[in-house]
Image 1 (cartoon, rainbow, N blue to C red):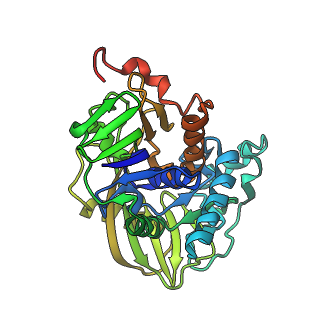
Image 2: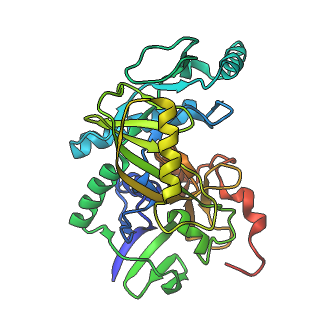
Length: 358
């Protein structure tokens, strides 16, 4: 029988960061994860964007989340002696004079703090970039090589025995005074669900308002396109080195396609042609399902009726930015009973839990 303090189900960006934080504090952690190549975290381009969306709105709690995440990923770079995090400017391309004027009008109230470094109404002359109406330069953002980061953490977990590449069977979990027992093999003081979109089928958390959506990304070669920044116009174009870029992402609601689609490829290729008129070659295409929430806020905290069980997820497309700060917050709550942010706590949905259902 293996004894641990925390049993974590899932090793995407939410579970991996939480496991790291708890282990760094000296706790015995055991993680179960099947190792799916097309998980949302493995597919993601890892973009950290302070201002996003059609409304060009400041990202939720950006002033706290972004610097915390940057410091966290730099710490992981030191630990694994690899480069994962690239702090880079983001150039949001204006699509029209109307969008240009709208952004200039909004800028008078400075709704974005210091995250918008400059607005330009003329083409900045970036190599290969079509931006006749100018755009907005964003700072304090960047991107993380999520797949490579998770692979390094998983290799350590496999080597040291705290990561098991298995599918967790929730029907074999039994809660008892002081913790839980799993499959007659593991005793844990606390269990944490970090399953991502798969949590919609979790017998303990299926009542949460998770609304997964599927996203596709393209990997492209475009040798002469400027790679000194992330580009954004209807899609992000993230440089990944040597004239290669990741372009994304689509949003598809259920029913989901079984993997990448021709429609997704055409949509993303069309969006890229709005950014550049340079020729490009598609070298790869991937699809994953994001664990989104109706109100676009994460879900974390204890189960309402099972004391030894917690949830951490619902990060949607913001996982790379959210995960480090929320991992520390949840660890503090579990270990020291500190308060969670009310707008991130799953307690805001406790009323949805069916009566008599654990």
